[in-house]
Structure formats: structure tokens, C-alpha cells
Amino acid sequence: MDWGMRNRLARMFQPASGNSVMLAVDHGYFMGPTRRLEKPAETIAPLAPYADALALTRGVLRNCVPPTCATPIVLRVSGGVTVLKEDLSDEAITTGIADAARLNACAVALSVFVGAPHEHSSLVNLGTLVDQGEAASIPVLAITAVGKELEKRDARYLALACRVSAELGAHVVKTYYCEDFGKVVEGCPVPLVVAGGPKLDSDRAALELAHHAIADGAKGIDMGRNIWQSDHPVAMLKALRSIVHERATVREALDVLEAERAHPTPPPVRVAV
Ligand code: 5RP
Image (cartoon, rainbow, N blue to C red):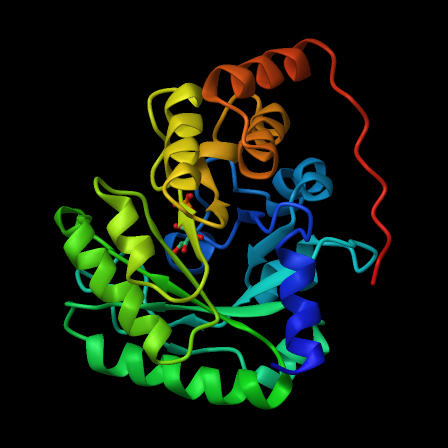
């Protein structure tokens, strides 16, 4: 693997723990102004210092994130369909690798839709993006989308989607947590990170999800709504960091959450690479 590729991966996955806490704020690319992400700049600013990477589109990056931001960028480069359509799988590559390089992206991300009507084109898109990413030394994160077909969120289906993504060359795969998640990890030869999905009933439930995923072998999280739709987003992000990087228990993470709510601490200073 080229130095540039390894360097980009090392900026996202913290060398000390080997894991990553990515903040997903890319939902607008097909959902529009999602609750509590209506003004992306306001949602992102207080959270960015605590994320190991920001997952977003070029439009939000250019318009809502200052170029002084030192948090690595995972650039979503697929799209082309919205929640107004029944079938969400008809995506194409919507941002070129040259623009990703201009934006100093640490990785590019696209969705694959295994089992959906446009499975074939989404997988071919992944292959194309991996070719472009390898040439530019930019890693590719494949997002195993389940779209509206939530019933497919089981280990057999997700293991298939993750393995296929890795076989086609994805450097990192994002998927959902499920029962028997260890089987999904086992079958995937590249690092897996988990999404949170729609907002759960409580902060505790989201911390439990992250804890189970890390215990089962995930290399991190790429979570959105369960952070910025929480009533305490910064405290929630810090609590999740304690699980992902320090292997805190759910009880310990809840203590971090409570302590942070009571006495917020200033953000760390990050040196831009
Ligand atoms: C949108 C995405 C999201 O980034 C992903 O689902 C993570 O966000 P959340 O934790 O809110 O599910 O890929 O298509």
C-alpha cells in the first residue's frame, strides 16, 4: 500500500487504539434537511473537534465547514436519488476523484445496494471508484446501504454485502450492527465501522450498540443521528469515544456523558497535517 494511502488511513484510524470515531453528516444528500441537521454549519462546528473524521458531501464541506478545520474528511461521492423515490438504489458516482483530491479528502465513500434493483451498477461503481482511489492513493469506504429494506438487516445479508465490498477493493466498509455481528466481522477482510441508524430511544441504547459492535470486532463507528439528534451531542460524542478508543463499558461511557453534561471541557487542539 502506498504511503499516501497509509497516511490517510492512519489519520482516520487513531494509531493508539487502531479505531475511529467518524461523524456522519451526509444525510442531506438524499434526505434533504434532516431534523437537527437543517443548518449543517451549526451542527458540525461544536462536534468536529471530537471526531476522527467528518463524513459529508462536497456541497456541505465547501459551504458549511471552514478550511481551517483539521478533522479529516470522508467525502461522500455517490448519489442521484432522493427519499421521494421508492427505490433508493439508483446511485451513481456524483463527485470525481480529482475534486476529492482538491478537497484534501482522507477517503471517498459510496453506497452499495446488495439485493436491491440497482445492485449491479452500485457494485460496478464501487470497482470504478476503487480504481480511481488506488491511482490517487485515496482509500474507498463502501457503505452497505439497506435503504428502506430494513428487514435485510441480518448477519447473513450484511456479511454478504460487506464481503462483496471488500472483494471489490473497498479499503473500509461501513455497515449496520445486527445480531451475530461477529460473523459479519469474521467474513470481512478489511476494517468495518458501524452506522447508528435512526435515532434510538435513548443515549444509552446508542452507547450499547457501539459497545457491542466494538466488542464484536468493529474498528469504529460512523454515526450520525444518534449523536446530533441527541439532546447532548458533544457529551454523546465524547462518551462514544471512550467506548471506541478506551474500551469503556456502557456504565463508564454513561459516566462520561453525565460528567460532560455537568462540566463541559474545552475541545482538544489538533494540528493540521
Ligand atoms: C446516509 C449514511 C449515513 O452516513 C449513515 O447511515 C450513518 O448515519 P446514521 O448513524 O445516522 O445512520 O450513509 O446514507
